Image (cartoon, one colour):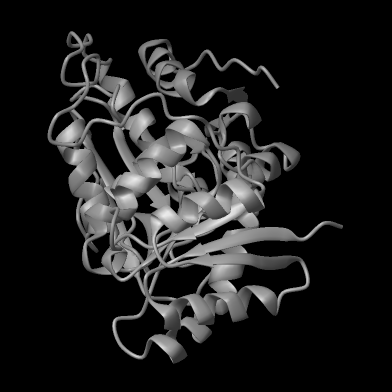
Length: 364
């Protein structure tokens, strides 16, 4: 089997050396080049034709985000962001993901040598995932959260209010690699009176606050990190805090969020499995499940439990996924009622909510 060819782009000689060593220790990948800035990287990419590049953000001669933007327009390829700035400024990371980066790894703030070695498993796993990702050409730079593009949720005519019974539903979303942009595409069409939405996106601590704030500026519903014990209300979306599980429970007649630091599930914290299992147990037929792009199988078995408990489930199709792992496994578990392109999921959910809750349609 051909090895995954990687080009490392970082202005730090130490980081270039460490990443090269980590990559070359793997049997299935090889670092074919290490560049100190994007201009050198540009020539390496032309000559070496790598499968994946790791890219720092703050570099001399050309900003990493500017380089990423040009790369995704002219020669789209899998990119994993590796930068201290992604930890200190999560907005930079989210911008990179908007531009088409597949995933990110944050350098430790101190002790880079030992810290990167501890992150080695995460780094190489994300390189493997990136090598298999579906990367699309970016036609133009994405608009920032502060200036939503024409036709976005802020510019659409208001939708009719949903029937009162629909607001008793709760939409549960699970995603991983590629999920930040997929979640945005599902949430933006939601009207202000949409049912409550509860989300688990695989993310480390320090990033979900900015992610939630960014979505809150783009959507008509309110979006925030979930807080332990808070009521789950219509018109709101609640995102599992990075590094903590989120599940749903009941308190009297109310649904509430439970945020906890229990052990990782399926190697993840937050885990989609935790959220979906709680939905199956607590919500039953009041749940709508959505499985979006991501590597692995987290949440697939629990999504089948949701279906068996009466939930109606949507799964993103392969063509529109960055990585088809979690959706594929959900389908294999028989958890899906409908498998749809990403750009059709929000409308399908809203159409179902506006129709009679008793008319369940099975397409799969």
